Length: 170
Length: 278
Image (cartoon, rainbow over all chains, first blue to last red):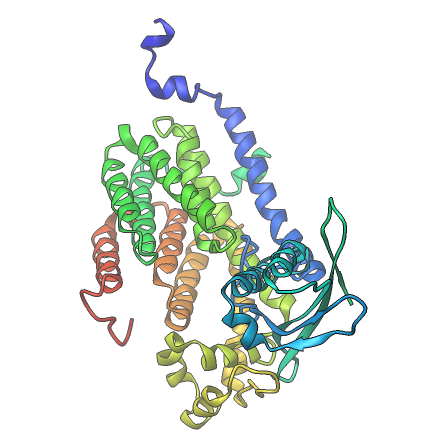
């Protein structure tokens, strides 16, 4: 039989020996067995979303949601002044960047780099603003069943290329 | 490797082919109904056609491949907002594509892998609840009663009305609470959740315990579904549990699966109301 006359399936996926298939299935099962352990470590260290990424930890804690509770801006040489989050959300370009930042932190925790969203905000804000600060908040259920806040303060500075914006947690 | 895979093997040579066929249909129907909930009728229609095509063994692998592509595209578009349930669907479809279901030993491989997955899911969902520690004093279930309206019917039976009203009165803001219920039964139920999941995950590793473990796991799934109301996932898990039995119960129960999934699809399309008990 010439190659062109082989069934399409055989050409797309050549027949593999069953022992090889068994080995592959076994390796996948081992990975799936170890992944929830790694997932738990990632949640503990980087605050990634426990409900996502196939870690089998849905319904273990309230579904995480990150909100941005304060935004501050600063002009060169001056101190920070607060920008009302409502006013920021009223501006379409800022709203989109804030949404991106909040979603990124909700899903990836501290693994999410806020610098790209901050760069968009620098571009959207009028004037020569050179620093931005945000406070992100997640609500957690404490041992006594009370909702408590875990706040993270992030400061971003305009810098020089190739990294036009750098952010640090303070 | 062979010993570990062999833990999940039984002499069900006569029913393996039938089990693969009926589970394939149930899997693709649950995925189609699941997609309906995501406002993607075209994807749901393709998946439904795949389910029907898969009734013929010759097309099963191909239809699994098409369904897998549809799901993967959806995963890429929506990542990372992909539910654990969807990942499981991808793993199961990949398995169907991977094996040659005309071969008896590969049918067995498929069933071994599905059984391992079922045991892992039970075990780890319990272990994660234990690790996060929010079930010990029942605070997570109390929080769920307050914030998830779909759990209302279940918690109306489990919690005193004044307690439920207090919980539902709390806002989702700093300082709200306490999300606790002073009831021994409620705390037993809360701890019973993770204990039974871990116990069932372990019990499913022992062939002699399978009949008892499967019966208990189905009961546990019914209780979980009564509270969490994720029926599509529930249907999939129950059908995976029936892969542990020697007979092909999924095939016998196929009309029931189809009717229930059709009802859920009709609810999602807004054609019929969600019944109070569902």
